[in-house]
Image (cartoon, rainbow, N blue to C red; front, top):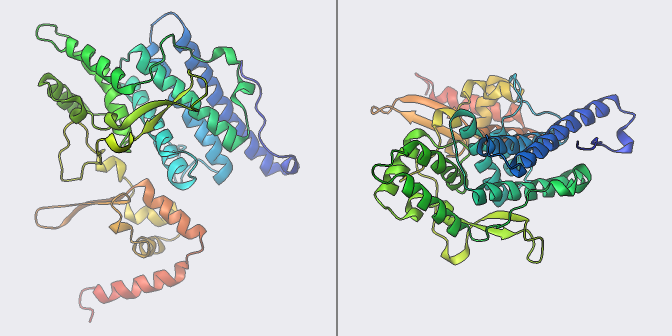
Length: 383
């Protein structure tokens, strides 16, 4: 059983609001450690029942709760204005990486891959080799340990016994060899006459998740993407073309002279790395595409202001002032063949940009006045 977690400073103990905040953050953190302990317990147990599914689900939940604890202390909230539910794991990843800047590119890729595996395990089926599951588990613990130390001044070994750390008799040190072994297993499942397509796709999903995470994606692979990858592998396409993101990843020890059992995934392999980028909206990728724009850019422009605690008109003015419509990662617009706007939406990045501008003291009255003048001139009949 994890030890009781206490967060906060002596100076804040007399402040009722500070006590409440500290307790809420501690509750998130306790949930994170409990899920981590269960993930490790399931990883280490001899029975394989539900192991491939339960370990990513619990490890993903551990990360979500840990990030919420850190974000809650930094922002005093883990819920957007007007939303009933707290942040999703995808939202937590975005805030931690882009706003608070507390996780690196390597760590973001790992947590995003775990998020995708958790989604696949919850809504579909996945299957991993022992070594690939260990890479996820052990590198996940490495990131959790660093976040606890650097952001919360806590030591993981003080929260759970060192004996529960997952151990592998053959820890992999070359990710490419691991991927090739996985793909050889998948190829055998796809061999003519085997009728093991579902099993092959279950093993493909975590590889596609890890591949997509290397290029900044957080949503799980769709069935169309899994089918496209399966077809490419059946055609014996070079795996670095089917899974180019995986070609940029490597497994390295946390410290050169550290524990061989503690590793972390790293994005990029220096000069020999294969160039990888997100597919453009009008471009078909071989096996992995950007997420559904209606999900990624779900924010309505008319609600931008209210979500930030300002008026609708101030929201429109802020969008224009920050040139959000010129930011491909913040704004999406789909038009008909005639050029009429069919759909336009904002991503989480747009809201983060807006919050930062308000926190920095942007003059909302001034930019709204300029916006009103500019758009009055564009109104029908205006001269």
